[in-house]
Every structure is written in C-alpha cells, then in structure tokens.
Image (cartoon, rainbow, N blue to C red):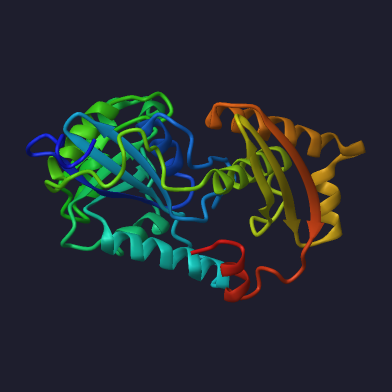
Length: 300
C-alpha cells in the first residue's frame, strides 16, 4: 500500500494499550494483529519494552503499542524507566485502550486512570469478561468505572477467547485520524527479529522457571545470523546470582533444554523457517542497578 493506492478517508494511528500488570495487554494486542509479537506470562511485569504491533485492513491501519504494566511498588531504576515508557506512550497516542479485568478494580487500576490524558480519546476495555458468571453484574461494574473518566466507549471483551474484538476494532477505527498508512500492508511489528528472539526466550524462561526467578533477569542475543531460511540464534540468559543460574539450568540441564526447545519452536512459527538455537546462562550481578545498565540492555 502506498500514497497512490491509499483509499480515500483511510484511517491510521497509534493505539496505546495501558493498564496495571497482568490484565492481558500483551494477549489482547497479539490476537488483534493475529501474531505473537508481545510475550505473555502469568508472572507480573513480563513486558518491559514499548512493543508495536501492526494490523492493516482495507481502510485502516492500526498501530498498537503494548506498554509495561504501570508499577506502583519498588521505586527502583527499572520501574522508573518502565513507568516513563508508559507515560510517554500515552502522550503520543491517537487512541488509548485502558484495560481492566472484569469485576476487579483496585488502587493500581486507579493510578493508571489518573495518568490518562484528557485530550486523547480513551476506550474502557473490560477484559476477561467471560469469567464473570453473573453477566448482569457487568453493567453496574462498567458504570462504576466509567464515572471515573470521560471514556469514548466501553467494550467488554475476552482477549483469550477472541470475544467481541471486532466490535472493539470498530470503535478504535471510528476514533483514529484520517492519515496515510505508516507501515507496509504486511508488516506486523517494527521490532527486529533479533529483538523478538530475545523476548521469546524470556517468555519461556518466566513460564518454566516460575515466580522464584526475579523479573530483572533478562536475555541478550549475542549473535543472530541468517542464511537463506535458516536462522542461527545464540542467546545468553543473564541472572543475578549463582542460585538463579542453577534454577534456570535445572536438574541435569532439563529446564534449560525445555526453555530452548519451546523457544525454538515459537521462533520457527513466527519467522517462518528453521532455527538453530543455543542458550547459555550467565551471572551478571549489578547489571540492572543503574539507568546506564538498563539502556545497555535495550530498555527504553
């Protein structure tokens, strides 16, 4: 799609997805664009970066921006950087999706509402609505939240079950400005394959190791090579202590092998070709204790 073929009244803009940790922001973006570009995990604060997912249809291009969950605890350098990412994304968005979990609203949700700018249209998205047994209770709950901000629309959805996502996209498109597309029609993200590879490994790490591993552990792609359809990926999992290293490796290397296998399969699905993957575990104490260290490892 280019300027000469762009339909009249074409709509295009950036849509920020915000909410407290673990309300389903990454899952929602992945199902909206139809590809897994933002990692998901039950572990809070899995997303650390500003991830862009792109969906292009005949008359619109949706540029979704998945943000880290806004942190209200532990005012360390990492959380300050994550929160700065959230606030900067809100300011520059054309539309905001404020995501909450059906039937649940607490101080952390309120703190995100307090960040919402008044001059950017915002849609209240009530996720996991399929879990509410008494559907009649959804209406008063939605009205309670709607009283806290001037929302442009209210849409109950289930990202996991792909419930009412067409209705959500219709509301988003209505609010997008008339613009030519920013990305090509086949683009699904602005992130490199190298970055996506690191995120896939990090997702499997948190899924398989569990809550015992601090979320400051990260993944560094030391080498990424491509020959035809084959990609060779050499990754290092960076942890803070030797005990964490043993935790990741597991008994006779079983856990690290599973992380590697699941990561490779996800990469092959996303990249559309074979992947050779090697993963090491390294102790890098002190790497996340300052903002310079955060920037060195790709934080924004």
